[in-house]
Image 1 (tube, rainbow, N blue to C red):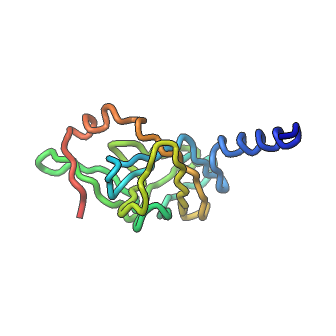
Image 2 (tube, helix red, strand yellow):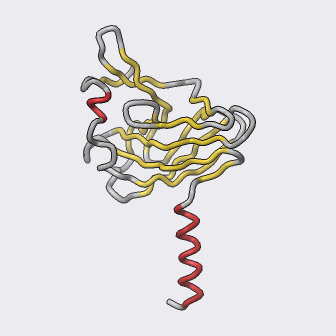
Length: 162
């Protein structure tokens, strides 16, 4: 490989390592996980930052790795059991602020995985915002990240919502 190709390759790699941007919205620190190698579901987590002067809202997500993609959160029922539920109205992203999608909290849920999510893979996710529109985020699969403490944060009990 020549010097010119090496420089171009390096610049491309640097561009891919940076945050995803759409208007005033930036996505940082994305990663995805599956529960097990045989899982039919998985999830993506990230930080959504809004550098704009107007609030925005994440209203939908899609990906070719799943039959269905939903925006989810965890809620505790009257018995203290945590369960995942869809957030149909999406997640507010305040002007000049951020919204964190993290294990045990809000997240992008992949239902009916079309392929396994394996360590080191990349998952293409299209996020749709009310004002910023669509943006594609390349999300690395990291099956080790955040594993410790996630179930503890949910009280060790979780069941899928209806």
